[in-house]
Structure formats: structure tokens, C-alpha cells
Length: 65
Image (cartoon, rainbow, N blue to C red; front, side, top):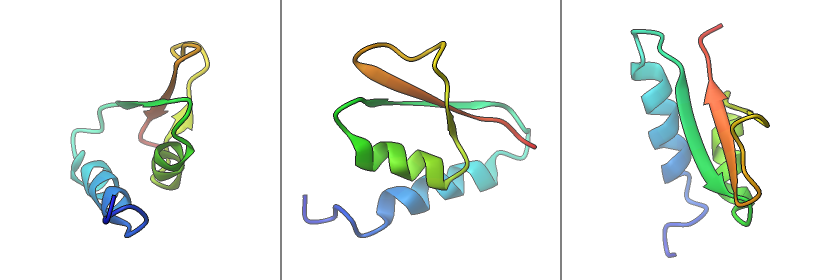
């Protein structure tokens, strides 16, 4: 909890996206009760995928533009 809000998760996800030189789609899931993690994915360019989401988990996908 001491690291929450420090930007570490955003840095890791941004690094993952930057390292994705193969251009493969990336998929991430977060609990619907965890808006902070969803915000991290959105900041990195992920978009919510309603088809793959469930009532408990929001699924996000990143595709190379």
C-alpha cells in the first residue's frame, strides 16, 4: 500500500507496451472494484472490451495502431 499512487504500475505497463515490438495484442483484466488499476491500463492506451468482460472483471485490450 505504501507504493500506491507512486506511478510504479503505470511505468511497468508503459514499459510492457513499449517493449511489445512484435505488435501483438495485449490483454489485461482488473476487478470491477479496482478503478485505479483500470485507470493505469487506460493511460497506457488500453480500451475496455465489453465482450470479454464479466460482472466481476473488466477486461482491457491494447492493439497497435
